[in-house]
Structure formats: C-alpha cells, structure tokens
Image 1 (tube, rainbow, N blue to C red):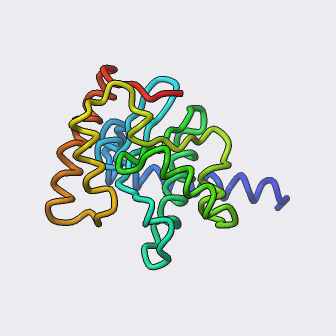
Image 2 (tube, helix red, strand yellow; image 1 turned 30 degrees about the vertical axis):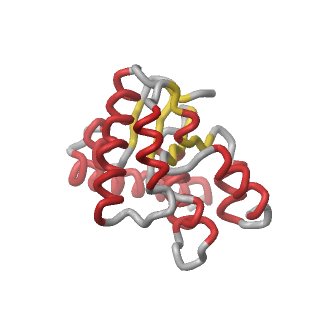
Image 3 (cartoon, helix red, strand yellow; image 1 turned 45 degrees about the vertical axis):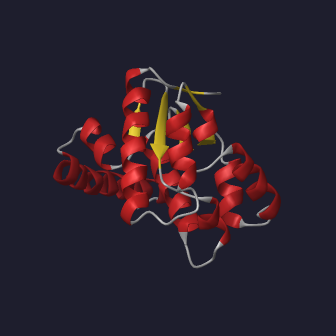
Length: 173
C-alpha cells in the first residue's frame, strides 16, 4: 500500500471515529456542541470562552496553559475556515501585556499568541459590556473558579455569551 493510500485510509477511520463520538455526545448537532463546549459559533468566526486568569499561565501548578493550547488547537481544527477568538473574560488587556513580557519564552503562551487566525480576547475586548459586569468579573480575576467565584463567573459570563450570540455585544477587532 502506498503511503498516501495509508494516510487516506487512516484519515477515513479517524473521521468515522470522530463521527461516532460526535453523534454520541452532541447528537450530531453543532449547536449542542457549542453549548456543552463553551463555544459561540457565528458565520465567519467562533468564540471559545474560558475562565482563565493571568495566574493560570504563571503558576506551573495550574497547568492551564496546556489545557488552553489543547482547546485552541481542537477548536481551530473543528472550525478551520473561521476566525477564532479565545475569550478570557477574567483578564484585561493589561494582563495580556504582562504575560507577553513575562512569558516571552513560554511555549504554551507563544503558541496561543502566535497561531494564525487565533486572537486572544479579554473583557476589555467585548464591546457593549456594562461596567458592573466588568467590575464583578475583575473582582474574581485572581480567584480559582470555585464557590462564590464560580457562581459569579457563571452568572456574568452567561449574560455576556447571550449578548454575544444575539449580536448585542461584539468582539472588538
């Protein structure tokens, strides 16, 4: 068997495997996938949102950089034809600047910041978000997502997601 035939057969098998899992977990529905995977799917872009904080990328015990990169590549693979906004609503542009300076040799941060068609966005990049929502999310920006911080994050992120889906909020370019 020629190498290209082997690769084609392998890709076909992996697609079948994906399809079985996609049917099982999401009933073959991208909207169901989006709801369960913290994703907003629009015509020409996709938004993946997560409760990352600056500490997640600076404290080695957090392992969030590895998870964020994995989610980034998975989302990019699924939506290869769309711009990809990775939204961290507990972070600010200043947090990104600090990470850019302090993590300039970090492989996970490098991948997140330099992957083509992937754009890291923060609460500062959500156009239309109210001052109260921003204030509440930034009050928990350094807290782990558990207990009251988890409740706060879910409450305000749910509102942001709803308004991004409806078009009332926009991601700044």
